[in-house]
Image (cartoon, rainbow, N blue to C red; front, top):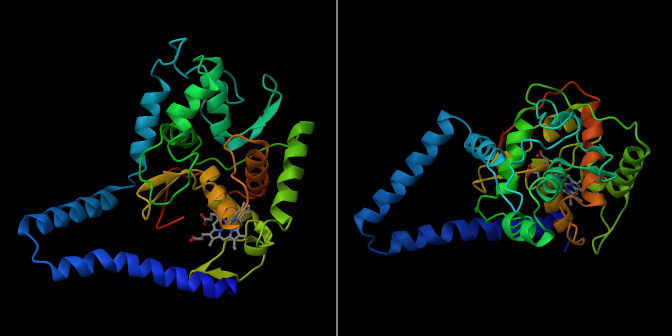
Length: 292
Ligand code: HEC
């Protein structure tokens, strides 16, 4: 089936799924209480959106987590070095992904948080998987509304770069390598569908699901898009990070799982954030999106 047509039928199917529960409600003599409850829930939701961005809860909860002692070493993450020195969070996200000498790797924000959980808190890979990755870092289902503590931490740290434009450097050879790898990954056709990211995100005027696809090679557009993540996504009722957004498209391309903190994860983010760095668009986290 051609891609557009397939998307269209998926869309119709999704609409059907949305309508289904309401159809059931209208046919069943519902207790008044239940619909009152639903009304109250919707009203609460509408209020929370009017008052502001529910993603702010991720910032607050992430801050609390950041300063909470945990792990075998009973330490918090407050001494974590995001590239500007131990404990400096202000402006750090604007310069990530970046090279870190202690791990000899280019790391993303989430990747660096995981490194600090190991070095400062003494957590093992198994601990990290159990406590942090099991919630939506191993399964990027849109309907999974559980809150991830790793996303909370990332949202808190990212928000400390608000109102600053991205400015990643490609000074270190490993940063240059990661950028080239990201570029290659972005432009290379892969997977069962023989698609590249560029196929959808480098050609002006491509529309899918009625949405114009962002041109990620345009610095201003890349600046707006990358600077909005982590973003609260209404449809999911959850905050999604840059990693999650890339992973959704990787999934759609039928490619293997994009492991958070992996070389390809850092490369894809660095490539797009480098584009963003060529604009003056400021980071504004948490973003607010109808869907992602
Ligand atoms: C078949 C088309 C397609 C391909 C291939 C594709 N994407 Fe996407 N991408 C989309 C769609 C659709 C959206 C969601 C747009 C929406 O609903 O707002 C999206 C959204 C995004 C966003 C967030 C945009 C925003 O406005 O928040 C990023 C970043 C992104 N894709 C990166 C990538 C990367 C990186 C790749 C390659 C690994 C890729 N995409 C491959 C279709 C594609």
